[in-house]
Image (tube, rainbow, N blue to C red):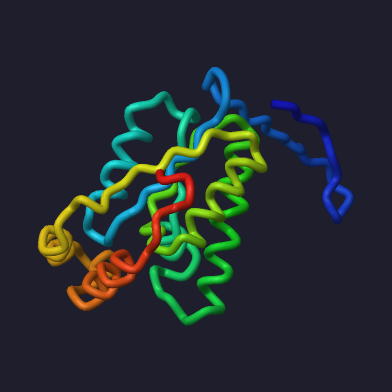
Length: 176
């Protein structure tokens, strides 16, 4: 940490603190991208991964948590989603460039989502790892979702729509 005296707009002296964030990871950063329906266990798995590591080694970044932080969990169409996606991408990129492993726990049901995450990993010289939750049965996802409180609950129809989207999703060209 670097600290030095500075003046604010009123001319009084204050303290300017610059923090340098460094991961204790050794080697190349990793970007883990989850793939699966709402309620399939993606975020639970992601949080277990983060908590299994020393603080600062891994972070969880996803649109659901950013929606909650930025907009109280609400979605107001494409405007808020563009904001959330941009913020997610910038945060992931920043963490990877600092050598911090990242878990993106979004559904990532469309190939374009995976392509975007792979591109961010490549741009940051990070390893890309796909964590697949598509084996979890739709009815199990619906049952888990029914137990979720508030904004976390998406509903049966959303999960059925996600299942249809997933069924139409081609596999990434590398076969992963």
